[in-house]
Image 1 (cartoon, rainbow, N blue to C red):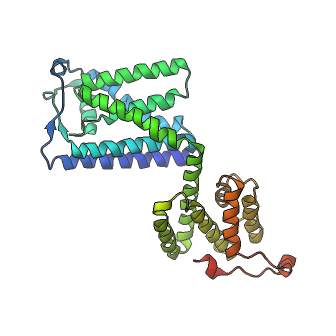
Image 2 (image 1 turned 90 degrees about the vertical axis):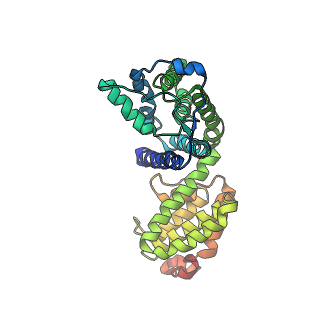
Length: 338
């Protein structure tokens, strides 16, 4: 679960989430009477400079390049969750306090005018406070700045100032919008980004992701297995962390059942494949490309792995002495299909 195979789909998912919330909030605001955006009188005297749109658009450009900067899922996932959380918080505020443009109508022509009007269409209407443009810029500057030396961090700080100035000089945001966006971005980094960057949180996300990957394989062969998994998920809603090992054990049990019954093709002997999972649960290292072994090796600590092993042994009892000689009985399908 690394590389562009995961970061690009996550980027696409984020932009779908973003425009669903951002666009939906703007659309719903039209059904109400938006207030005029909050502003200081001196802001109305700021010049309108459409050339600063080029600086303003560096924020979405940097976000588009993020999968090539944060190239592993362990670095990309916290950033993805942080931006998603900021979008959700801002969406609630946009719906609660829709704000209309305070500046007079803007007129721009020529090449820079075309660039400005393109950016203006992307911004939509009524989504003013907090400025998600500013929130995303601050989040990116802090996260990417941590990967740089002092020079890189200084350049990112200057970039934040330039982005803030561009929001004012193209008459897109007021000072309070930008200040609220700055606060939202810093809060997102201090809470979601820090929490999601923790190794235990990333391991938990990894287990859930591997379970979903296995579930996709199960339902293609037996769609009826989706029902029990959804039931298990529903039961886990209010104890998600405690039930994570149970979900992992369920997915591994179905995987072993599919392999031993010929529903899942594996390289080599099927029973040896099942035994390799038990070796991983006993503390062995999982193979890099094997999803099931990665799932078996994902739980942190021997006690967690032993819990899954015990659950699997209850479903698939160890073979008898006769079975060890080469006449192993088939595993009970009914138990694994629960």
